[in-house]
Length: 381
Image: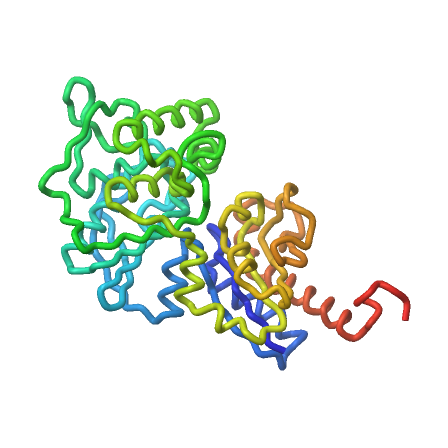
């Protein structure tokens, strides 16, 4: 029996590689002779580049950029040949920000632009950027500043490149510091298809989870709209431009980036179509399976890429109550690993053990079904 284990990370808890290993441990207790293929993935959010780095044996390097609160921070990127990969979450990811400091309007993304400049100066011709899992809603103004753009208010005073200042921008300029993008390809891995503004936009959908107060949601949505009416109104119709708190829109506008589905790109790079051939079961997973998952997250992307003849089950941290009835998108069933009400801290700490335990129980059910033909039809034999 060939079992493919293809999970995303469990946000703020376990990496995709750790999730895959825990699921395998649980299944091995029931099916020790099975052939297991672990393929940790990401969809553009945190952990995506780490998964690619392991699978593709990419080289790793480090540099120093401006961190989320203005202090210098060492960050890493991976590469092969003339292509470099990094994710915004390694610079200003939500998981890096203490709860008491989570304010998406006052955290700076200048370091993202600085890193892009650094990679171009080092001779990389293609840069692949994951934009999910950020702590900010700044529409890419920080990125642009880090590259060399400058933004001014009505009085001509230089503005600090933060989300809180989007509505104050009256004009901007491209300085000589901005890199020459001739011959440079920027590929932006998005984990959602949300537009920049509106009911499904960056502020409305992702603001609360980043720490944006409810009363500021519509204000920030209006600020994003005002800013992009000035710098690039064409972006409003672009699917996925709301990813990363509008970082995706910024990469398109200021770096001529191309938005692509993160999970589709990752699966292509990992040669998933070949690896899944002959599989008897595919297991997917992420921290929470919900309606947002349906718009481009890893489990759905994997399911859509898997032949319909191969059953898929999902093992997740938790399940939303607004999911469609199973089966959907080729996922036959989904299981939550949370067995009791507990604090988020204890729940995160218990994730590995809960994953292994849940995987073992699922494997036991599959073993029962395999031995009893009645489970195939529901009829008495």
